[in-house]
Length: 496
Ligand code: ZN
Ligand code: ZN
Image 1 (spheres, helix red, strand yellow):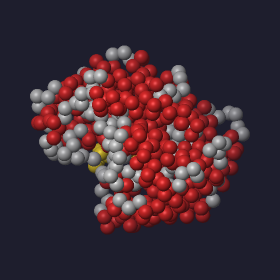
Image 2 (cartoon, helix red, strand yellow):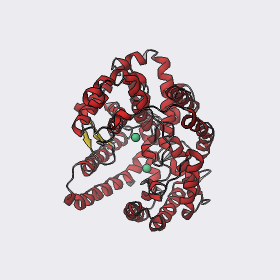
Image 3 (cartoon, rainbow, N blue to C red):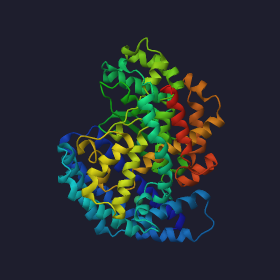
Image 4 (tube, rainbow, N blue to C red):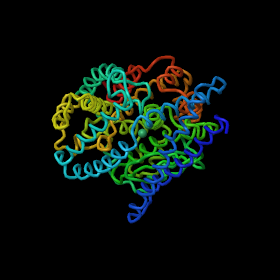
């Protein structure tokens, strides 16, 4: 077969397997009966192994090489070859038996972490974490890097990003955020949220989330909403982008914002053009850009004054305790800032500090400057300096996240980058669409979505994040946009 046709056929086969695996994962995390768990893990393992073999086959390697030598490919074909080729070489650099040992060790480590977290027993997990750090360093050596082994790991999530650039973003951000949070908590007027204390039945919460998802343009003919323990979005194939959420009866806003967050991820995937299906380009530009979309819909839209002008009556209809509460009071209640121990519960202002702390620690672990045994103390110390609160135990400290236990180092910065990309994109959007607030207040989010479709979603993974952000906003990533947004909004909410 001709090289290009063979290449496309191979990617389609890999894509179809991917689709099957994703659907099995979705089912595993939403409705799979407990007794089916063991067999399911085996099925997913077998299909994943097959998929990995295809994605690293010599046949694919030879086709990539043939195509890389050609100059008659379309832009999209060339981008596909570049992106798929890069992934191919990364995966090919790792010996299969090493990868298999890692897979076994990481699933054991994750199980050990779960037990250690439940008992808040860091010592029981320490050995596993040391092993994961060692694996990560060896992965970095296989992948190769110029300056720091950590760079080789970030590349998986944020192509083109380096620890040097991250450090240059983190330092000024931290210098301004830490004193701002102090001012908010000491001199600001915290919003009242008393009226949010009565329970909110799950069924009514679900109806409200469905309404919000419809309003922002999520296509229910190409997706569905289910509940799970740790909310996620998954593309089970073309025309099938599913969201999940979690409703807490005693927290009326948590489920709604988690739906908007996942809805933002889903709008991105639903917006990727059909012609990119199974080309290696049919996903977001990076984890950070993906997170910019989810956080934009959750925070810059969902926690905006204009959104609550529109949404307050619907909210009060579903949640009787909010009847008679003004949209302004709801807006303010949705924007309380509380320095806390747990990253996933953090507000817009404090969130990035949770990430900076993790970035600094994991960078130290990978470079060898930090030893695993010192983590609990370093964690408490950084929490004290950044947020002024110290967790009482390791379950609420160093043991709270799954990532390191599964050997995922270099992932955390994507969350912070998502906030920064989101604010920078939104500043460009505000310039292009000056009456955005009036539109939101009417419940009309279609122009925002069209703008994102045209400028961000349309290219899928054809552009790296650095290139995308510069093309769309005219500037490289600059944390000032986020700082301006945060200090402006919260000075207003807290009456500073
Ligand atoms: Zn990879
Ligand atoms: Zn997300």
